[in-house]
Image (cartoon, protein in one colour):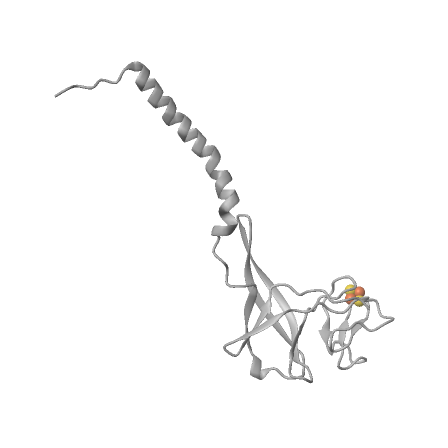
Length: 169
Ligand code: FES
């Protein structure tokens, strides 16, 4: 049986290769991970959030719908509550409007003023919107209310996380 002895030079070579390889991996792996991560990331279940509203129960009268979702910002996770005014238009299509006034961001309410029935009213500066969210000329808002995209799944209403802008008037 032959005894193989490791020389001092071999020992140093192996040690340096091991340490060098370890350091190189420590440098290269985060870069690789950064480059490939978006491809590996599991797709989340879409950007639509379930509400507790049954689509069959919606009418032509706007109702306030609150919905919540978790938002992850770096290491910080928070719960976001969104609100929409939802109704069915004359064609039966669902309309989901943001309640955020396009003037300075107060909250608008359906039938919020007895002087302006069947309109969205903003109490901060008497802003007015038609039922379809269009701003009434000569009131402070200069754009229509933002609108949420929606989906229907198993009879329930799902709304997009964020409302999108429409053209100004
Ligand atoms: S914030 Fe709504 S009218 Fe000014």
